[in-house]
Image (tube, rainbow, N blue to C red; front, side, top):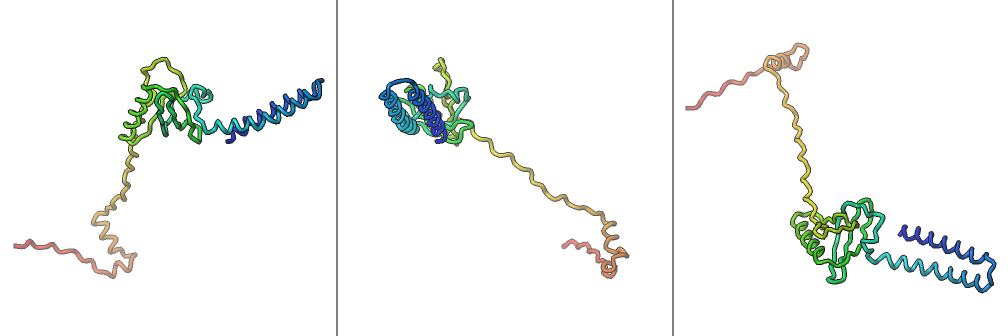
Amino acid sequence: MDDVLIIYLGMTGLAGLLAAISIWTPRKSWLKFTALVTTSLFLPAAYLGLVHLLSRPKPADLEWLHRQLPQATVISARMAENQGIYLWLELEGVEEPRAYALPWSQELARQIHQAQRAAEKRGSAVKMAKPFQRSLDNREKKFFAAPQEPLPAKQPVVQNPMEFQNRSSRDSLLTAPDRPEASNLPFIRPTPSRPQR
Protein backbone atom coordinates (compact mmCIF):
# COMPACT_ATOMS: atom_id res chain seq x y z
CA MET A 1 0.00 0.00 0.00
CA ASP A 2 2.97 2.31 0.59
CA ASP A 3 3.95 1.98 -3.08
CA VAL A 4 0.47 3.06 -4.15
CA LEU A 5 0.66 6.11 -1.90
CA ILE A 6 4.04 7.13 -3.30
CA ILE A 7 2.86 6.69 -6.90
CA TYR A 8 -0.33 8.62 -6.16
CA LEU A 9 1.58 11.50 -4.54
CA GLY A 10 3.84 11.66 -7.61
CA MET A 11 0.82 11.76 -9.92
CA THR A 12 -0.77 14.46 -7.74
CA GLY A 13 2.36 16.59 -7.96
CA LEU A 14 2.54 16.27 -11.75
CA ALA A 15 -1.17 17.00 -12.16
CA GLY A 16 -0.87 20.04 -9.87
CA LEU A 17 2.08 21.32 -11.89
CA LEU A 18 0.13 20.96 -15.14
CA ALA A 19 -2.88 22.72 -13.57
CA ALA A 20 -0.67 25.60 -12.33
CA ILE A 21 0.87 26.02 -15.78
CA SER A 22 -2.60 26.02 -17.36
CA ILE A 23 -3.98 28.55 -14.87
CA TRP A 24 -1.11 31.03 -15.11
CA THR A 25 -0.84 31.07 -18.89
CA PRO A 26 -2.45 34.00 -20.71
CA ARG A 27 -5.58 32.14 -21.84
CA LYS A 28 -9.28 32.71 -21.59
CA SER A 29 -10.96 32.14 -18.21
CA TRP A 30 -13.08 29.20 -19.35
CA LEU A 31 -9.90 27.34 -20.48
CA LYS A 32 -8.31 27.89 -17.08
CA PHE A 33 -11.47 26.69 -15.33
CA THR A 34 -11.59 23.58 -17.56
CA ALA A 35 -7.94 22.77 -16.70
CA LEU A 36 -8.73 23.08 -12.96
CA VAL A 37 -11.84 20.84 -13.19
CA THR A 38 -9.96 18.26 -15.29
CA THR A 39 -7.16 18.10 -12.70
CA SER A 40 -9.62 17.71 -9.83
CA LEU A 41 -11.37 14.83 -11.68
CA PHE A 42 -8.08 13.19 -12.65
CA LEU A 43 -6.84 12.76 -9.07
CA PRO A 44 -9.67 10.54 -7.70
CA ALA A 45 -9.80 8.58 -10.97
CA ALA A 46 -6.08 7.88 -10.73
CA TYR A 47 -6.39 6.76 -7.10
CA LEU A 48 -9.33 4.45 -7.86
CA GLY A 49 -7.45 2.96 -10.82
CA LEU A 50 -4.36 2.25 -8.72
CA VAL A 51 -6.35 0.64 -5.91
CA HIS A 52 -8.35 -1.45 -8.39
CA LEU A 53 -5.15 -2.76 -9.99
CA LEU A 54 -3.83 -3.96 -6.63
CA SER A 55 -6.10 -7.02 -6.62
CA ARG A 56 -5.36 -8.07 -10.20
CA PRO A 57 -2.42 -10.29 -11.20
CA LYS A 58 0.30 -8.42 -12.99
CA PRO A 59 1.44 -9.80 -16.37
CA ALA A 60 4.89 -11.32 -15.78
CA ASP A 61 6.21 -9.62 -18.94
CA LEU A 62 5.61 -6.20 -17.34
CA GLU A 63 7.77 -6.88 -14.28
CA TRP A 64 10.96 -4.86 -14.74
CA LEU A 65 12.09 -4.19 -11.16
CA HIS A 66 12.82 -7.87 -10.44
CA ARG A 67 13.57 -8.94 -14.00
CA GLN A 68 17.01 -10.42 -13.16
CA LEU A 69 15.70 -12.56 -10.29
CA PRO A 70 17.12 -16.11 -10.71
CA GLN A 71 14.16 -17.93 -9.15
CA ALA A 72 10.98 -17.51 -7.13
CA THR A 73 8.92 -19.75 -4.85
CA VAL A 74 5.46 -20.66 -6.14
CA ILE A 75 3.01 -20.46 -3.25
CA SER A 76 -0.04 -21.21 -5.37
CA ALA A 77 -0.93 -21.72 -9.03
CA ARG A 78 -4.24 -21.72 -10.88
CA MET A 79 -4.52 -22.77 -14.50
CA ALA A 80 -7.41 -21.54 -16.63
CA GLU A 81 -7.28 -23.41 -19.93
CA ASN A 82 -6.90 -21.14 -22.99
CA GLN A 83 -6.96 -18.06 -20.72
CA GLY A 84 -3.84 -17.97 -18.60
CA ILE A 85 -1.79 -19.31 -15.71
CA TYR A 86 -2.16 -17.35 -12.48
CA LEU A 87 0.68 -17.55 -9.97
CA TRP A 88 1.20 -16.34 -6.44
CA LEU A 89 4.96 -15.93 -6.06
CA GLU A 90 7.25 -15.29 -3.13
CA LEU A 91 10.17 -13.16 -4.33
CA GLU A 92 13.53 -12.91 -2.63
CA GLY A 93 13.89 -9.60 -0.80
CA VAL A 94 10.14 -8.80 -0.93
CA GLU A 95 8.10 -9.25 2.24
CA GLU A 96 4.66 -10.01 0.84
CA PRO A 97 3.82 -12.42 -2.00
CA ARG A 98 2.84 -11.04 -5.41
CA ALA A 99 0.31 -12.19 -8.01
CA TYR A 100 1.38 -12.65 -11.64
CA ALA A 101 -0.25 -13.91 -14.82
CA LEU A 102 1.36 -15.90 -17.61
CA PRO A 103 -0.18 -16.54 -21.02
CA TRP A 104 -1.69 -20.00 -21.39
CA SER A 105 0.74 -22.74 -22.33
CA GLN A 106 0.04 -26.46 -22.22
CA GLU A 107 3.73 -27.19 -21.60
CA LEU A 108 3.97 -24.77 -18.64
CA ALA A 109 0.76 -26.17 -17.14
CA ARG A 110 2.22 -29.69 -17.38
CA GLN A 111 5.48 -28.53 -15.74
CA ILE A 112 3.59 -26.90 -12.85
CA HIS A 113 1.50 -30.02 -12.29
CA GLN A 114 4.57 -32.29 -12.28
CA ALA A 115 6.51 -29.95 -9.99
CA GLN A 116 3.60 -29.78 -7.52
CA ARG A 117 3.37 -33.58 -7.36
CA ALA A 118 7.14 -33.97 -6.90
CA ALA A 119 7.25 -31.25 -4.22
CA GLU A 120 4.40 -32.90 -2.33
CA LYS A 121 6.30 -36.21 -2.26
CA ARG A 122 9.53 -34.56 -1.10
CA GLY A 123 7.89 -32.18 1.35
CA SER A 124 9.47 -29.18 -0.38
CA ALA A 125 8.30 -26.14 -2.36
CA VAL A 126 7.73 -25.50 -6.07
CA LYS A 127 10.27 -23.13 -7.63
CA MET A 128 10.13 -21.10 -10.82
CA ALA A 129 13.41 -20.48 -12.65
CA LYS A 130 13.96 -17.00 -14.16
CA PRO A 131 10.34 -15.97 -13.63
CA PHE A 132 10.52 -12.66 -15.49
CA GLN A 133 13.05 -13.37 -18.24
CA ARG A 134 11.84 -14.24 -21.71
CA SER A 135 13.36 -17.32 -23.25
CA LEU A 136 13.22 -18.42 -26.87
CA ASP A 137 13.97 -21.99 -25.85
CA ASN A 138 10.61 -23.69 -25.23
CA ARG A 139 12.32 -26.83 -23.95
CA GLU A 140 13.79 -25.00 -20.95
CA LYS A 141 12.20 -26.17 -17.71
CA LYS A 142 10.58 -23.24 -15.85
CA PHE A 143 9.00 -25.04 -12.87
CA PHE A 144 10.66 -27.63 -10.65
CA ALA A 145 10.43 -29.07 -7.15
CA ALA A 146 13.03 -27.72 -4.75
CA PRO A 147 15.41 -30.32 -3.33
CA GLN A 148 14.51 -31.65 0.09
CA GLU A 149 15.99 -29.72 2.98
CA PRO A 150 18.89 -31.62 4.59
CA LEU A 151 18.37 -32.84 8.13
CA PRO A 152 20.10 -30.73 10.78
CA ALA A 153 23.58 -31.89 11.69
CA LYS A 154 23.76 -34.05 14.79
CA GLN A 155 25.33 -32.33 17.74
CA PRO A 156 28.03 -34.40 19.49
CA VAL A 157 26.98 -35.51 22.97
CA VAL A 158 29.40 -34.03 25.49
CA GLN A 159 29.95 -36.41 28.39
CA ASN A 160 31.81 -35.64 31.57
CA PRO A 161 35.18 -37.34 31.50
CA MET A 162 35.66 -40.05 34.11
CA GLU A 163 38.00 -39.11 36.91
CA PHE A 164 40.63 -41.69 37.75
CA GLN A 165 42.78 -41.92 40.86
CA ASN A 166 45.24 -44.69 41.47
CA ARG A 167 44.96 -46.74 44.66
CA SER A 168 47.95 -45.27 46.47
CA SER A 169 46.71 -41.70 46.10
CA ARG A 170 43.25 -42.78 47.31
CA ASP A 171 44.69 -44.46 50.39
CA SER A 172 46.82 -41.42 51.16
CA LEU A 173 43.80 -39.20 50.88
CA LEU A 174 41.77 -41.38 53.22
CA THR A 175 44.43 -41.50 55.93
CA ALA A 176 45.94 -38.06 55.56
CA PRO A 177 47.14 -36.66 58.96
CA ASP A 178 45.89 -33.16 58.15
CA ARG A 179 42.31 -34.48 57.84
CA PRO A 180 41.24 -35.45 61.38
CA GLU A 181 37.86 -36.76 60.23
CA ALA A 182 39.64 -39.17 57.87
CA SER A 183 42.23 -40.34 60.45
CA ASN A 184 39.55 -41.36 62.98
CA LEU A 185 37.78 -43.60 60.50
CA PRO A 186 39.05 -47.14 59.98
CA PHE A 187 39.83 -48.14 56.45
CA ILE A 188 37.99 -51.32 55.55
CA ARG A 189 39.28 -53.34 52.70
CA PRO A 190 36.75 -55.50 50.86
CA THR A 191 37.25 -59.21 51.19
CA PRO A 192 37.29 -61.25 48.03
CA SER A 193 34.22 -63.39 47.59
CA ARG A 194 34.66 -67.12 47.59
CA PRO A 195 33.53 -69.04 44.57
CA GLN A 196 30.45 -71.08 45.26
CA ARG A 197 30.53 -74.81 44.64
